[in-house]
Image (tube, rainbow, N blue to C red; front, side):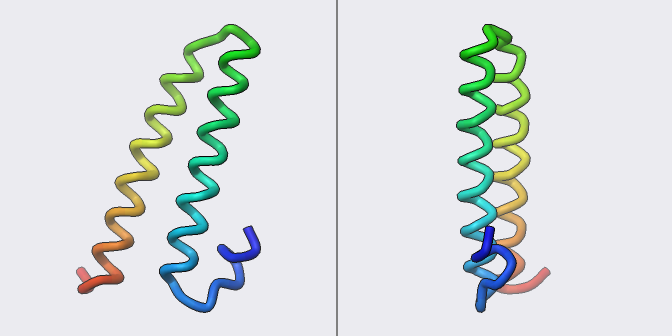
Length: 66
């Protein structure tokens, strides 16, 4: 979280956002496992897909602009 806020480069912020997303996906999967409500897995998949697309868009923008 600190690297996301203070990161000297935009690339640092993108990587830290991706790490936070993967951590939250793991947390959602653990919650789904322990509560036996596997609908949360679908939520995690959609969240992961949207995060992946967002990181790709930001990476493309940083690489060459829109």
